[in-house]
Length: 188
Image 1: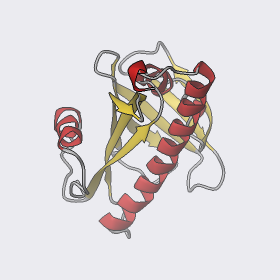
Image 2: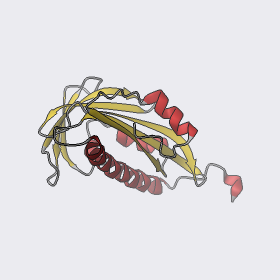
Image 3: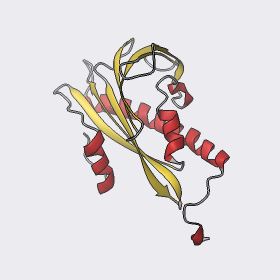
């Protein structure tokens, strides 16, 4: 992982608990954190939809899941133009509705993300007196021949940052529609 970059002790504890990547010699790994001003249940309702990642991932145009939606399910994802890929085949490794953890592994496709695995965990928090969600996403991936670990991590982090920003935008839009009440009404 790329250092703790000013993470809080609570964030570090969540990472220790849920984000267990063991990168090999020719792999890179990183962890990204996003604070979203929407309740955990709303954010999780988007993240847990392995069959509909395009609801918040802007680079995905279409997704088809083979079989039932369960651990081991495989989805075929079509990637929008502008990225160095057109398809990705991904397997659901973990979907924990109690702990709010989702893990996927890329198992095929026409891209350079070999042996890519990611874990996403969601945690409740309070932001500006309202229910919020701490989202932590980590990954490990092979470094393609001709690339450096830094270049590979930078590319994947940029994609994840874009996905997390979109997740925040969609989730916060849903939260505004719900007109979420402050947690502590005595502070008015």
